[in-house]
Amino acid sequence: MIKIISECNDFIKDCGFLYAICGGYALELFRGTELRSHSDIDISVFEENKTSSIDFVLSNGWNVYEHIVEWDFENHKKGNSCLMAILSSSDTNITGLKNIWVIKLDCSFFKIVPRPNEGTIYDYEILNSVQLNFDFFEIVFNKQEEGNFVLDTFSSQNQFIIRELDKAILRSKEGIPYLAPEVILSMMSHPEYLKSDFHKTKNQIDYDSTAPMLSKESRDWLINALEIAYPDGNSRIEQLKNLEEIVC
Image (cartoon, rainbow, N blue to C red; front, side, top):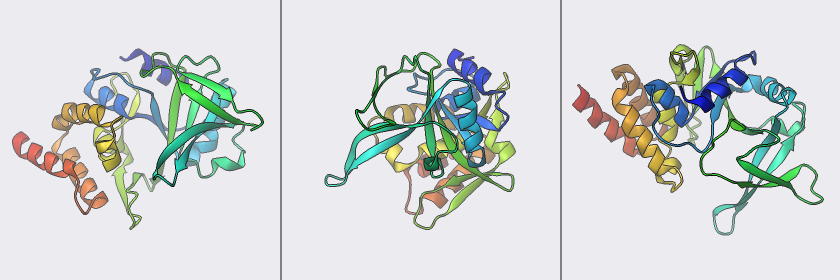
């Protein structure tokens, strides 16, 4: 078992709400083997447990931040980014949050410096390309509805894709909950991830090592999910269909 994920699960397992490891680590839990280095740990929590999750980590001595990306609208690209401290689950700015960064005081992964005269705003520097210690994780808030995990396609039609909870959240042999590989691969198939210099290499490693291991039912679900999310096409759709022909 990957030590950093085991430590993460030991920390959060008594939180009292449903959670699941997501991102690249989820694929390693599915495979049972390590694939590559990772820049961070991602945990999925449902939106209705947002305040509970913030209360849990704050009460255990961790700091919570909103990651704010400052856009350069003139040049149509991301500009600088900063952190805004969340001091309580009753803070008014948490309602619309899609994710939070959870950081230990003595974190080895970040250098965090308060901005002069800007209250709870902080500049930060990432000190390592790979997270070595369990002193940082990101909580991503997802949706559930009527026993289904709900994925937002971010399309102009406001379409959603569902996966039954018992298929969307699996458990490793050690009992660690993680998002199913087809759910992770559907998220990783967003065009921004496929073309991003930061993501595309590790994205390809994750896909190449995991997609052939999917069951036919999981593969069919993933193909259908991508066809709904990307009606104009997505490179992963044909790759999965070709893989299906080879496997079958």
